[in-house]
Image 1 (cartoon, rainbow, N blue to C red):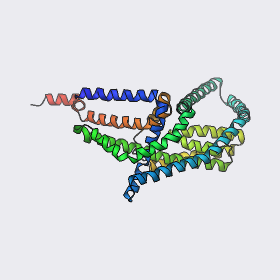
Image 2 (image 1 turned 30 degrees about the horizontal axis):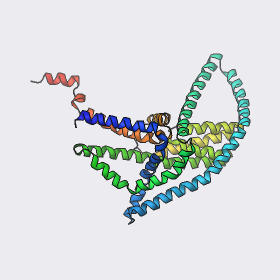
Image 3 (image 1 turned 30 degrees about the vertical axis):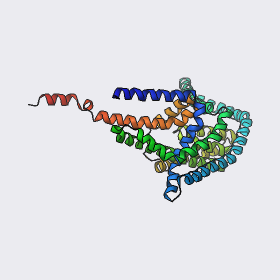
Length: 362
């Protein structure tokens, strides 16, 4: 098979894969979720194997612990989340009236300090910014909603995902060995190196970022609950969970938390305390948690992560959101490899000055 034929084979396989994601997203959701969980749990199984457990026993233990803890967490959080969401919906008219009252005061204050032209520019800038934020939030939320909108999809996630996780986790090493045998022998070492880099990127982001999200959710939730903010725990915890979207997750939580604080308290001190909690959380995440738990191994810029999540959710729903970062990590590794190959090639080295110098040599 020539290089051109190999390239067309990869292009065809990628097109088929994207087509299956687009048309069979709901069916593939539990399988992709199970694969992601198995990937995250594989190091724990390897650790138990090194302690003397068989692969089957290690898989049973790790799978059972993971899904039992997940079920307990859901049983504890779902009633709290549901009740707070219902209470929040009931209080929306009261909050809206309070915010309108505060906005009238702020508008009159700005009108007294700013001229008509500056006030119009400020209004247009705020309108454009809020429109972009709402559009982004609706796109990302719509991607999640389309993936879990049916009872069948939820049931498949609950019933099929544990089974898929168990079998994939049990046979993970055999699957990796089988795929390794399929690699073209002439390029096997290069492909293994790139796959290792992809694995480092994914493990650094997925395992590290999941820990950061849980810690930040606990920090925001407990902090806002301590301040006495209505629905503080749910706002803070969900803010932490969506903090895997760089800056956007914290910004959404900050806007919601401060808005509730303004409507509830109406005092500068209480509102400042809520804002201070989000500021402290951002400092904690950016200076301690993310550098320690995620580090520099990820190699994914925040802008690319936001784009990948939004594009994946828009095109393929929940499955696209799950696969967004892994696919972006693969693209990033391949792009860096291609750039390195280009830099080492004669095409990059043939600079005009070097050509002129070489032509003058005797």
